[in-house]
Image (cartoon, rainbow, N blue to C red; front, side, top):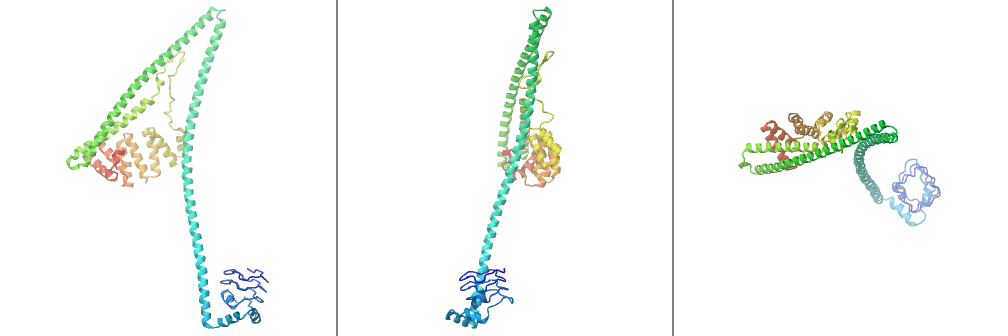
Amino acid sequence: MGANLMGANLTDANLSGANLWGAKLNHADLRGAKLLGTCLQSADLTQVKNLTATQLSQAITDCNTILPKKDDEEETSRPGPDIEEKKTSISEPAALKKGVAQLREEVLEFFEQSVKRQTAEVDEIKKQLATLREVLKKMSDDEELLNKEVEELNNSLGNLQEERKKLAAELKLRADELDKSGKKLGKALESSTRSSELTLSLQQEIDGLKELTAESISARTKAEELQREKDAEIANLKQRLDSKTANLSKMTATLKEAQEKPSAQDPNELARLRAEIVGLKRDNANLKKNLGATVAEPAAKISPASSKGTVPAPNAAPDNSQDEFPDLNQAVKNNPRDPKALRLLAEAYIGRDLFLEAIPTLSSLVKLNPKDAEMQFLLGDTYFKAEKFQESIPPLGHAVRLNPKLAKAHYGLCMVNELVGNEEAASKHYRIALKLDPKIESSK
């Protein structure tokens, strides 16, 4: 705007669409310049060289545009007879219409190209935004996974540090006891030649150490015997578990065969088979729980006590029954309405088969979001695994009301209703579960 182009050589220049508002073009040469849509409002065009009427008609002017004087126009049109002919032809209506039509086509082509170019730029920006959204989503998922792994590592590190502290304290205690015993023995040996009374005391100390050693050996022997008994018990439990599993597979195959031929099977027989399968699954769960408890039972309970001291049994494990997951419990205590912390604590309890401990945490989660069908099912399933069958029915029923297509919730209602003697409800939910997921029994 207001550009100073006095005396500029603009021969054959493409000034289409340029904004030359208020420009000074005195003595500028516009021979063959393209002025389609060029803004020449308030521009000074006096003494412009080689400016034709066609060029001027294609440009945008207003009442403030200083046009060339007629004498100047005649001078600028003197270069040849061709210009004279063009000026004469422009005055004719047909030529004027043709020029206007050509001008309209050029203007439309110019704007069409501009629109196409802007549309292409918009499409490219949209593609870049979509790519950016995908990158941000992936970064968010990676960050969440990384935070979970860091939290697990922190939990493991805390457990290792606790074990390290306990081991260091135990080693220090043993070292102190050995140091004291060594000092006593050294003093006794030094004074044994001077006093029979000290010799007798030394002998008593030695006898005490022998007695403590004998007790340690006895405790170790008892621990080994208990370990053998535990191994035998574990083998027995495994044998029973294998037998129950084989029976469960056989009963499941029988039930599946009966379902494939419903016309040849008594409905009461099907209900009986389902009840037996539920019972076998429950027995399997109890056997697995007993087997885990037998394997994890600490051997420290058989450590003998002596007036001379206490010798812990080998492989004794610290008692963590008061607080299984201190970090997660502390996180929930600090923010009892944090669904992420509550979910992690509940899953930790369930992973250790601590179903009764998991129930209060799951109940808190359900209160925070009562319309979560998956959480309602998890609460009902945990009640079922804790053998609280009546308590498992309401959350399982709520889950199928929230999501009627949740097959596992229908199957859970089938199993619990079988156990409480409600055959009609059990058959109803069993049919719905098989319809939604024909393979649900093989997945359980």
